Amino acid sequence: MTSPTHANAPLSPEGRRRLIERCRIRPISHVAAEMGISRATASKWVNRYKRFGNTGLLDRSSSPARQPSATPGYLVQQIESMRREHKWSASRIAFELEQAGTPVSRRTITRLLAQLGLNRRKFIDPNGETNREPQSINAKRPGHMVHLDVKKVGRIPDGGGWRVHGKGSEKAKAVARTKTRGARIGYIYLHSAIDGHTRLAYTEALPDERAVTAVAFLGRARAWFATHGITRIERVVTDNGSCYRSAAFREAVGTSRHQRITPYTPRHNGKVERYNRILAEEFLYARIWRSEAERAAALETWNRHYNYHRPHGAHEGQPPASATSAHVDNVMASYN
Image (cartoon, rainbow, N blue to C red; front, side, top):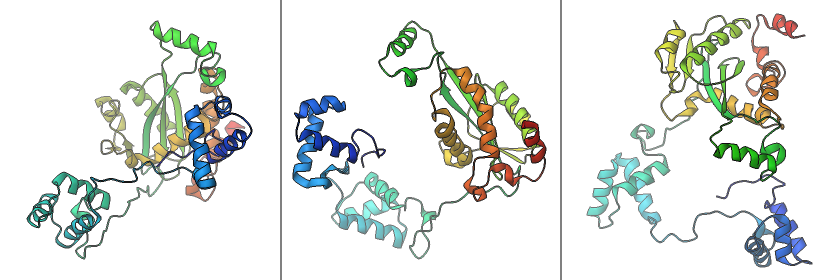
C-alpha cells in the first residue's frame, strides 16, 4: 500500500482535487510548478480523474495487478490444510506436493506458512486452529519492572537548523559546508527510565551512551523514583546496547534482576519505546528549537508535564503521578 498522508499534504486526495480544479483553467505545467511536483505527476492525476472521477484520486495498492509467478490459490489452500491437519514441516509438504505432481519449493512453502501465521507448530492447536495470541507484559506493582532505553537525536546548531531556515537556505548550506570540512554538530543522547506499573518516566539529555554514563543515569533515576515512593526496583529491563552489557552496569543493577530483551525485538521493551515516540511527537518535534541549549532547558519542563499533567490511557486519563500514593504532594510542592 502507498504510505498514508496527512489531510493537507500537497498530494493527499484533497491536494489532488485542488490540482484538478486549477488545471481546468490553467496549463498543467504551470500548476505543477506552482505545487512543487513534476508535470508527469500532475498529468497522471488529471488523467485518472478523467477516467475514474473522484475515486481515481484515492491511493491505490502498490502490488501488481497480475502476478504470473504467484502460487495458485488452490495450492496455498492445500499447503494450509496439510499444515493444520498433519502439522507437516515445509520439507515434508514440499515432498508430498512433488509426489502429487504439483512441485512447490520448500522456501516458498516456508514463506507462505509465515504469511498464514502457521510457521511455528506451537501456534497450532491439536484441532488445527491457530492459538497464537499477543502476550502483554504487565508490571504488577510499582518498581516491579523499570524499562531503560537511549534515544539518539541530532544536536541543534545555534540559530536553528533547516527546520527554522528551510532546506536550501543559506544557513542550511553553511551547516552543510562545515560538515564537508570535517566538523560535526554531533548528537545528544536521551536516557530514559520508565516504571512499567505507574508509567512514571525520568529523562536526561546526556553527551554519550557509554557504560559510565548509563551507570550514573541509573543511580539518579533510582533516587528520582525513590522520591515518588518507589524505593525498590525488582527488575531492570533494557535492550542489548553495549552500555547495558558492560560489567559496570551489571554491578550498578545490584540486587535487581537485569533482563535484556531478545535481540532485534524492541516490542519486548515496548513501554519505553512507546514513551520515546511520545517524547518525539510531543516534545522533540512539536515546536521549532533555535539551539540545543534551549531544547535541553525545556526537558525538565517536559518531564514535569508528562508525569504530573499529561493524561495517560493506562490510568483512565489521569497522569502517571496519580498512580503513586507516597511523596507526590511533597514533590509537587517543591516545584511550586
